[in-house]
Length: 112
Image 1 (cartoon, helix red, strand yellow):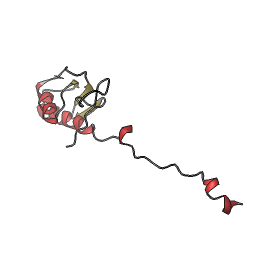
Image 2 (cartoon, rainbow, N blue to C red):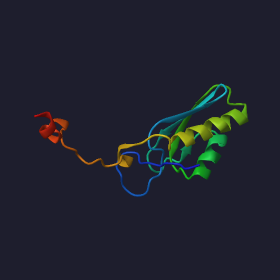
Image 3 (cartoon, one colour):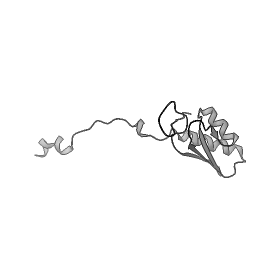
Image 4 (cartoon, rainbow, N blue to C red):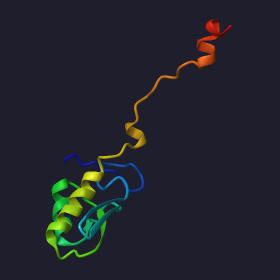
């Protein structure tokens, strides 16, 4: 899956954390991924830590709720949270649209 990474604070150096708070849910388990400062590492349980390392995320805080002892749901919820990092558009990915004329100006000959 594609993973979008971002910064915490200033945009200096390489991207290292999640771009914003994201959450994933599977069964009763909800996992939140929260951006963290550079050098923090992955703060979380062993299951999401392993998945986040494989995704290439270096610094992130995790928060989990629900029955996290069911490792299948815990892993799937983490996977879905990682997947959500690429499902929305941030302003840096917006297409540039050319400014068009006002419709009244554009069709002034026809309207007159």
